[in-house]
Image: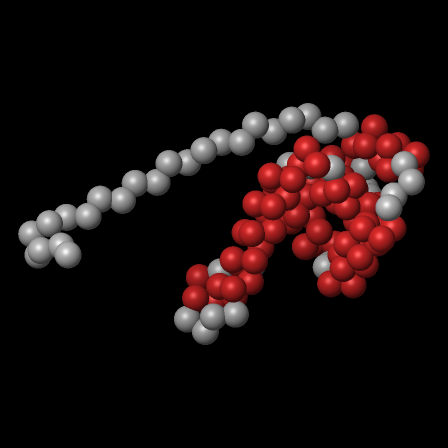
Length: 122
């Protein structure tokens, strides 16, 4: 237990993630040429289609670092969903996908709290 004259020090360290260059055309060609496992992929596609607006999908894409490319190429909702599902299904991306899902969960928890919702902008 701390006494009245003891201080507590807290420090935060901000870490930067390396963002790899992603070739959208190459990935979309891979999506078109790959047979997707519908039992695993389809529920994610359906969830994105039914529960997310294009604006929210772009927020996810922005988190992953490729929203600008999708906007520049004027992808529609279906193409954005295909891209997201393909990206999130790739085992190489499991760390960032898991982190993003965690962060979205925490944001929803904050939004659903009567007191904390005023601090969440999204």
